[in-house]
Image (cartoon, rainbow, N blue to C red; front, side):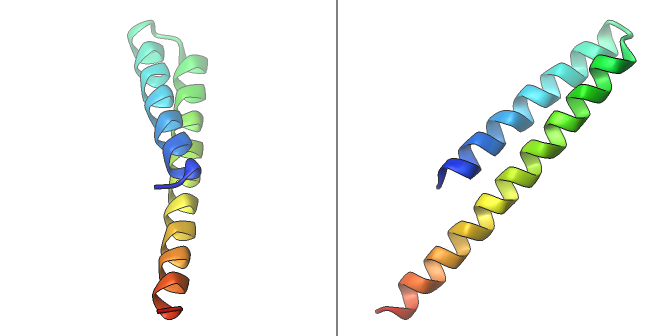
Amino acid sequence: MNKDQVKGAGREVKGAVKETVGKVTDNPKTEVEGKVEKNLGTAQRKAGDVKEAVKDAVDNNRR
């Protein structure tokens, strides 16, 4: 697990919480901000997944 995977997962959680707060408080701006944060976190986590897969492939080819 690399830092992008960890940070991305954190952003996903933060965004989900913010989105829920926006829904509960009937605040569309906060809800949208939460969705954006969650999606950015997902993208960052997936980028980390790709980095990890490339690293693993390179490591396996060196053996």
